[in-house]
Structure formats: structure tokens, C-alpha cells
Image (cartoon, rainbow, N blue to C red; front, top):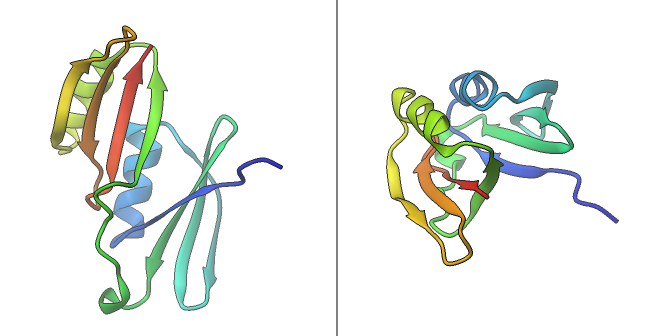
Length: 119
């Protein structure tokens, strides 16, 4: 068994796909309408991300404060500059962890929590 994908509910599929593709480097895999929702699958290496936009804004759920996506990066500083330039806000960090890693938590375009770790 392996993980197939991670899913994030978004308010604006076009805005979110632009962010994940142009800022983080994901590639579009497929788009569809499913059960009244617009769905987009993106890939980054072996990772697959599903962005889901409900047809009705009233059906949208608030972002979870505990759920987050974590990405390993080679150099945190250039990525952090790109993220801040794209309008992301730092929630915590950058912090240096006991094991020598550095990490920062930021918000994505729909308030989703994103963590970037330099190992």
C-alpha cells in the first residue's frame, strides 16, 4: 500500500492552481467535475495533490489549523522569498530544530498551512 494523494479544499481553483504550479512547481495531471465539485490533480515528483473547489461557497469548510502539508527543500531562503512575494504570510519561523533542521510555517492562498523544512 502507498499514499495516492493529499486533498485540500480551496475557494478559488484557478488561484490555487496558479500558486501550486507557478510558485511551488507542481504540474497539472488532470481536471474533472465530480459530485458538484471542481477537482484538479497536481503532481510534484511522486507526490500527488488534489485541489477541490465546492460549486457553492456555502459548502466550503474552514481550513484546519492542525492539518498541514510539509515539503523538504534544499535551501529555505529563496523559497521563503518567493512565498512572501506571492502574498503568503509567515505563521511561525523560521526556526531551528534540535536535530539541525530549519523550518517555517506559512499560509497558502486559501489559508491552508504549509511547512517547508531544510534538512
